[in-house]
Length: 367
Image 1 (cartoon, one colour):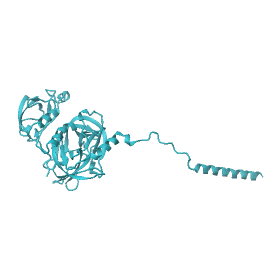
Image 2 (cartoon, one colour):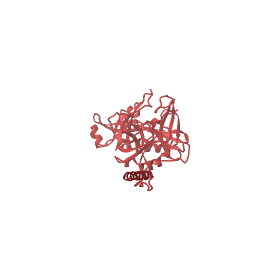
Image 3 (cartoon, helix red, strand yellow):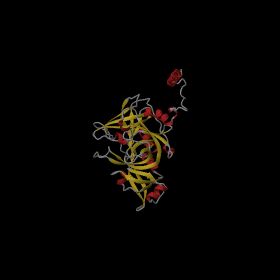
Image 4 (cartoon, helix red, strand yellow):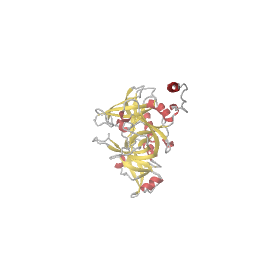
């Protein structure tokens, strides 16, 4: 009897354990706790601005006579980026993207994906800027902002067709790392010998948003969706350093191209930076205002008139010069072949005047 009782107890014990296992294996009848504050991408400012701007960011594909295209590609095909600023087909891109092109095609991003033939109607080599036109209406646009209001450390977004990857534009984000830089950029597609040229750019914004080959000509936008810069180059030997042309510096050339397409524009042939107290101290200048000449175009009007790097332009045809932007506006207000008096200051030569016959600003050469 004792043994039977023990056996019965073991059996009962075994049944109880099996029942417990079965109960554990049953699915939970109560749901998991819901997420707390679920992420809503529509509230993300970067997502919002990308959704707003992307339809106006276009792929710019060129055919060139040389097989050494600007951004690689099969048989002389180059790929860059542009953005539409007017619904009747005005597009901004980089000078070097379309330089030497025998044909220019512009493609809208998916899902539209329409392709149009484009032509150059204006530009400026000093600012690496080209303005294109396609014959189409009701295109999506992106507004131009005010780069003078951009703050150091402000968040920005860069869009462009990086590395010619298929599909829509790539998106990178970062901050404004520096304002009003003057930099020298190796342009692999320029030059008579195909070996490239060094292009000196003034009034550029520095950003840590990655800018890769193919991004050139795309917009750098603030979080309101306004273009504050035109992506032009990444620093190949450094990380998180990219450059974009200040949109306010580019605006006069864009407006002139729209008002008078393909009209010749006056050209001095200098690259300058605005003189302030910091620049004056850096270069040991005898003045604290003006436009400091960083470089001159070989054979250009300025070089022919004896203007050299290191000179400071303090007056243009009797108008006192406070900085580079003002100088550019005064030059554009004149016509090619106008003769102007330019007053300069140089530590070695003192104050002197040069008589300059303005030339014609070069546009991207296309076949």
